[in-house]
Length: 116
Image 1 (tube, rainbow, N blue to C red):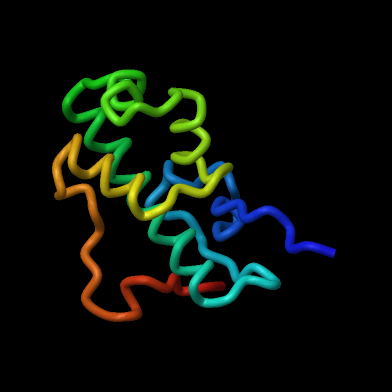
Image 2 (image 1 turned 180 degrees about the vertical axis):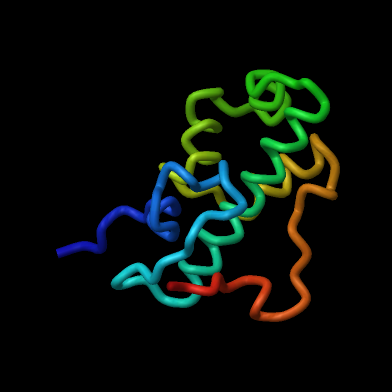
């Protein structure tokens, strides 16, 4: 039996908070290793920054999607954590919007969420 599909939003207690709330509560996901936890948590943090930057600059999501050659619906799914975004995609968002959307990583505590 294969591993279930990786859904980054599972890293937060309320999946609706993924990429939308900086107060999202992180939870441990059974079967995920530290790499998957870090990936999902970083994607959440990038999604928060992308949404904030779009709002601050009054840019519609569709404009960003077109700029990175992504279907708007798929980009929305990635920002909601319903689909994984790889590091290359997150870098494309950062290059389009400004590198300040990338969360700072100085040590492992910046990558792994504090789980309840």
